Length: 363
Image 1 (tube, rainbow, N blue to C red):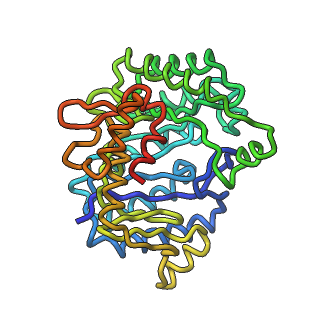
Image 2: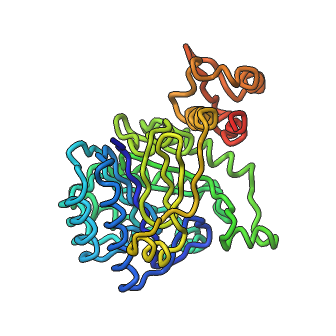
């Protein structure tokens, strides 16, 4: 049985200029048709799924209305065996958090929230195209606490043009003052098909790699001093609060992705659903495939992916799985990027800063 399920909710009330995930604006009829298709796709996989984790990503899953959530969550509960479920996460935009919606999610069994605060600096939020301000984000965090959520992650972005080291420190400190169980801190990337990528190409934006390195190092220092373990390059958690779902990805476990643009990997097969909500919904509802891309993944490629992700985590890469890259790893050790600890390779502080470069060893 497959234990990990990702569901992509593509609708967003606002399209952020840095986001490269598949998303689109919502219309009531379009959402209802999508939900029908999603539940039909779920039914197709129901006999092979017994989820340990479920993750709603987007898009902005929390943009769904109360009635739409009732339809979706009720349908999933009727179709899936959730007796082994340990972690059910939903991504939420602070602008879409409300007490009645939070209570509904809790009642249906969602037990983990990943809230995209991104910054506590209103000027930075504006540059990121976010529709909330810092006060709304803090209010939303409290709404989630009042609803009984005791596993909340705050997502942040550093490396934003115009974001000073002081601003980033204040964002980290305000996040810590709320005592979330988990924090994710991602460096801004300029992805194709985004407004920021176009601005980068026109010379209107430019990364400051030195400042980004300082922000990254400050993150590790402040969060580490506050008791948060850096269990993956961009992710920090209190003891026992690591994301089970994301850890399953990093370890190369099988998972199913439902909804437009969602990827799945099962055994040696990998596929992606259609990146168009209307076409996805029509194809699914008429009994045709929702898949628009599939490939065979060799054992060597899967081993390389597990190694690359493993090196990003605090469990590292065991010697028993590293023999194919031993020469490259020894060279990286000579450059101060990796170290040997007991029976495995681990990134150094410098290596965590250059984790993407280390990952190239395994590609």
